[in-house]
Length: 337
View 1 (cartoon, one colour):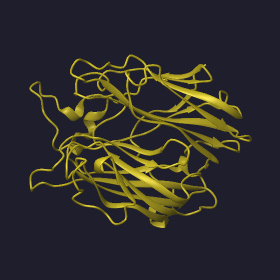
View 2 (view 1 turned 135 degrees about the horizontal axis):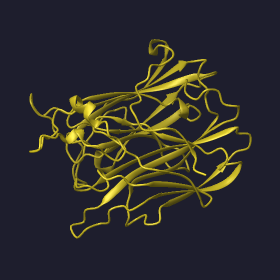
View 3 (view 1 turned 180 degrees about the vertical axis):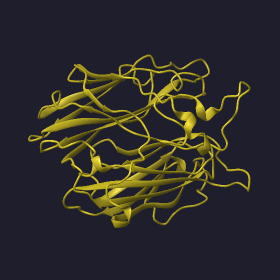
């Protein structure tokens, strides 16, 4: 039986139960540059708050101390993506780029906190509820910010975490990242990706938070504009099969000042896509896997059907995939009141 689908992708702009004015705020990144530099060049700018820069400047790292919250609470991530201006009319990077905020977890894959797609050269601001990650958003933590840009300068990033007491929220007790694949392709993962996870004793409920977006290297059809099935298995049994898809991208056109209008009158920002829209964050899809994941070791497997293979010019379809398990050691109240 397929896992219970609890939510599907959509904007994460809901109102916090308590005012952010009453929150504890931790600034993770502030005006931090993300830009591409060739391996033999020197970065043109750097923030003293950053603890590292990798992938030729496209991946930056910062380490911060997070509060040890007691009692029920929510955590809101406030993320702003700024294009670097070239002059009064232009920016350096006019294109929509995949990006992520990730938490470094020792001996496990990175845990994706936020998936986002930049606008076509526009500034975007995102407020995302990341309360389901509260068991690991405490203490001293290192965060990674990534934008898949090929321009220098390109973007700057601001990220703050807001911790707010909220007696209506049902905080989980356990979180474990299970997979992070930046480029899931037919060539490199023809049979999918498998991973092992140990579910601890005492959990009343276990859910999988899954994020998957389809892309292509040349902007043609697959896997960005053609729906593909994502198949999730536990211990060799299929528990979920679904197609990530967004058909509401037109309503975000005002975030995309540099998108192209084609000869048929359509706008690049308006097209439906495999789980994402330009200028919008990607909300995880959640599956209740309590029955499939009793205490003990399990193998999880992720597969995407019919990915576009590499053609003679080297172009192909690919997916960005991440997932984590979330568990509660008490009977659940209403999920995300």
